[in-house]
Length: 497
Length: 95
Image (cartoon, rainbow over all chains, first blue to last red; front, side, top):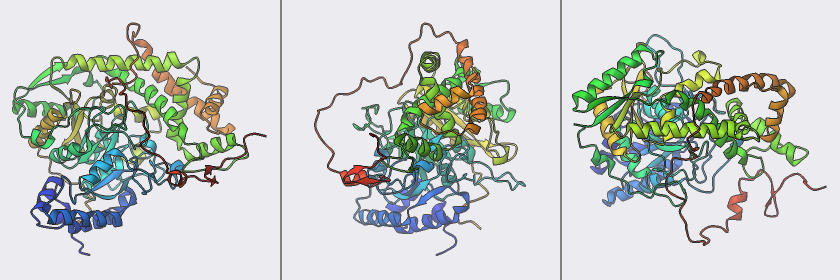
């Protein structure tokens, strides 16, 4: 196999699609290049399971359709799947020991839509255990490395989390794109850390059926890609009503790629003053200001807005998400699937299985959630947090009476080294300060790479939109992308050098 | 809100997670710190606000009550750590 497959893997998803349709190369050639790229990227630990045989079979089917002029929306395009989507017959771990050996007998709706559209599965990507984390360091399968390093500093950096494997694979050109899930920032923050695009759609836009549940009222499946256009193409396939998810929205799905064609003249862009916290690093604030200038130059109108309950979104989230997790994770009992640690009694079996099967962060959140839902504390913690959630959502609703979208940073920092990570859970939770409020409100938001930090690492900007207005979010994201001209590449690219 | 060892043991029992005696003290400290941080929610006046369980505004849809799945016992049991005679097998529950 040729060592240099970068001519193919360097294409965006849209370019690869167009090349396949023009028969400039075959789905098999593209897929073989990506299988080699996935192998070359193994030092990043981005994949838990590689599925090269399945990929080649899917590519062959795509080539047959393409040859007959019956190519589908994503025919022959190799993508990766966060290992929290159930894939029929393919190991699905959620990054947890407790799902040892689990091969789902069914396929998640979102991935089923991708395969029906002709996409090719390269494998399942690493993640924080049960998607609980912001650095991809809680996975049972080990941490993922960010393909970026600081110039002159060889220490491996975290890719962000929880969709860290997906972000690292896409950034390292080991997948054209990937699926992610975002419960408190898990698509947008790793996208920002790895210099790619990540889109969290509106709650209800993409079905959660077949996605291993963390916090059901906050979990959002969505696309991760190298360009805004690629994210638009993927979302159009992933989105849509699903009778199997009762919270799935029965709304038509626009043609998001076509929606990119418009401009953003006259749109009002809210700038939330509460996000300009005193401890916001100067380079993050400078990039944010730059983003405002870019949108102004593109004809949009910046408007200062207030989201007064921003400060309380994180503590509310860290009651609601663990409470829902403690309920959702009750199913892991060692009886029906996954890990089983034998005990003398059924009670022993449950307790020993869960003690060995869950890692420290999952255990912490299940315990907090169990406490918050327990008799005597339910009102004080759980209902209180849900009331604060209503206020956070109301802040956004009131802002959207005056503006069409909101511009904000994605995260308060660039990627950090594994040994720079705080042992303090609360310090880690603060990574999600700009992303969590959006999950509480269920709104669509995109992270777009916009610049480099002083130490040479990617930083993203975030556009938040009205519910079900992904089209505007994508269009404004595209305007940022055009203005930023982010052409930097990570130090590790699969198949280069 | 400070949790003590006994409370952590109680919560862990509710959550069906076995903890060793040595794990209780550090977890009590850790969880107490998180709960202290969460206490700031009490600064917010929520007396006139209803709890929000979900942003999904539509009411739960009705559907016809008909069987559209099933007859897949082998597939369901395929992931069981132990099964016997078409059932999940667990330690004896009734004496």
